[in-house]
Image (cartoon, rainbow, N blue to C red; front, side, top):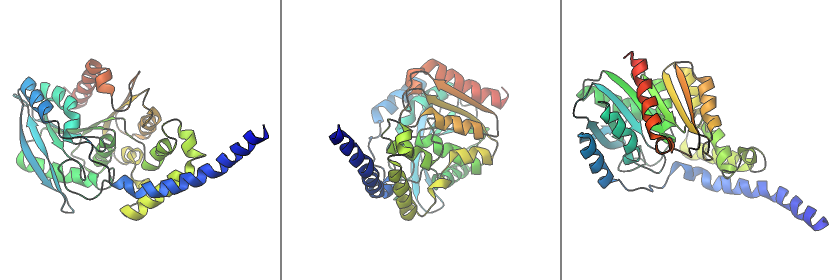
Length: 304
């Protein structure tokens, strides 16, 4: 029994130290996500064939000179509404093909861009909304310079959801945001990652040093305050309309993040908690309801 107690004491003492070292080593790495998924060329072609839509390359120069690459995709009969789609971390524009498909079926045109440091876009670092929100302004400027836009909305998943919310806070031309699996802020979500997706309580207590050192390393390497990367603050800054979506089995970014954003939001707001959905999987879990809710949200706020 005494050996067990000694081992337990050693673990309690060493775990925070090990966590601190690991947090420091991975902190700067958060800015350099691996580009995991190839562009889904075959699936994209199939989606275009099913919807009768057409795409064209759309390249945008960001304010700091980074070139962002993506597509403008138009349905056969466009209604003048455009939706900017934002994908998740380590993914690319083709990661939101499912959302693009049903939007196109409802006559919305879509912009599908690779985020900076993702896909075919340039950029050395990903900042989870700190720089990307200004990229959204550049995208909006380029879109309105070439298209007649009746309404402009945004839809994002995971990191993309966080970017969409932060973008709408500074870009008033974005009227509505659909955000699936967003994080409330970088520090809060670091507790989930430090807790090994088991419990944020571990990340807030025993492994908290991992979060502290990771955020400090990120601040130093990225040149920005990670506490300012905050969709929760974004929805409080400007009263735009928001539909938040989260899954009950999401252990990567649990529903408490969406719930915090919902509480902070000042504009018209909805929260849909999808039973049984894992991280960024609500569309696959409940495809019919997902489409109905998103389209109803956009149409109702549009006054149609």
